[in-house]
Length: 265
Length: 265
Image (tube, rainbow over all chains, first blue to last red; front, side, top):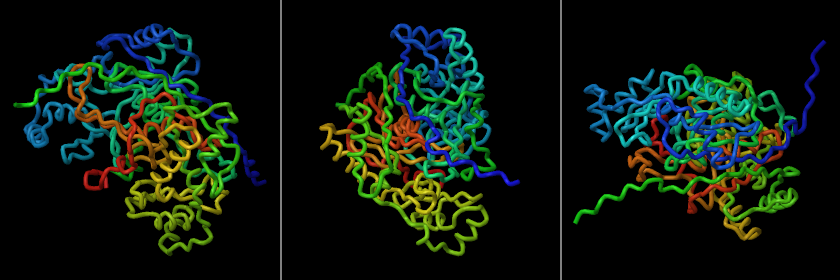
């Protein structure tokens, strides 16, 4: 017997709720070995707030990298003649370029003074995410966390111990994009929730089946957090409160398009 | 006399505020000729809310396109043999492919059943933004607004008449991205605020000059709004409240990287 067509559901999604983006400012810099869970919860306490059930924590990778000691003294890097020549041509720091190459799996583009690489994790971004701003005035470079999903999972566990709530954690970095000017925040680590929302088998309010509807929720959360976490204030984290996330074992890899199905590399 | 170096400012940005994302649900569909300003303000009034000074309105382009009558009866489209063959190969609607080509300035990629074009406006996206979901069950296709910045400016003016406030307006669509899975919201029209935040001449709290810091604020606002504006509920708009935007004459063109400086086309 043939299977009957699924019933057309009208408005199957509950009405959306108001979402709050709550900044978490830190009084001081993060040093290697610091517990981010401690720093963030005490910072919240000082502003008379706390984590609630259902909250999502979004943190910039910089404080994660700093707490994990992902710092490189630039004076220890010996750039290749090729890196030196290229950096000179575009008025860049050859040591940073060399470090970016060391942190990369593949060079995707190198042109007009811009180096786009695929990192060991699989992120495609400028300079393998190697960063010298917001570190210590240019002496050290900060790398991305070695395994950002593991970093997110650790923070997730430590927050659960302190708050009793299983709060999803997203770690972010600012990435440029092809075709569009400016950077936006992107998720580079995730724990405690799904990274994507898949509506592809669902129907719109007219009963039309959605073909292309895979929403990069983790990246949208990262961007929303970017609005409260500035580069120039000491606000490297925020709470997203009120968003109905899908709990589950999300991984950053879910957000990375395999080279075989990517039309742009 | 040489100009003195600017003083290193520490923490020049004010502490960030909490941001609220307030959904605006519509009771019914939008028809050609409808006033969006009326529909949105009355919808807010029903939920006992109103626009405040400082609010940003983010709207999905679908309701803008519908109010402007950007609908095409698919039965009027005669696809070329090439479109027919390609659509057949990938189980697609040849009329939608043909319409996407008509709406395009250039084909960027056409492979594996995916058609990436540059639209007449300069957006690079799948199928020139031509959409058949959330329209009327597949008989009509919805196009992007002809001039989304002009649409945003009109809504901005009409809201000012009704509310007394000069509220920035951002119009969005869901775009895929190279390298990353899933779609995120992107700004395709803007009025009343700058699209980008340029921190490139500013210094971090350590006094280090930021080289690469051009933030696509309008796209981050679009993504934040994407969290409350679902595809499957009737919530095509939201208010972003509490964000310190930079007032000014933003244009969508500010977000579009010129082909000459784009490494990926």
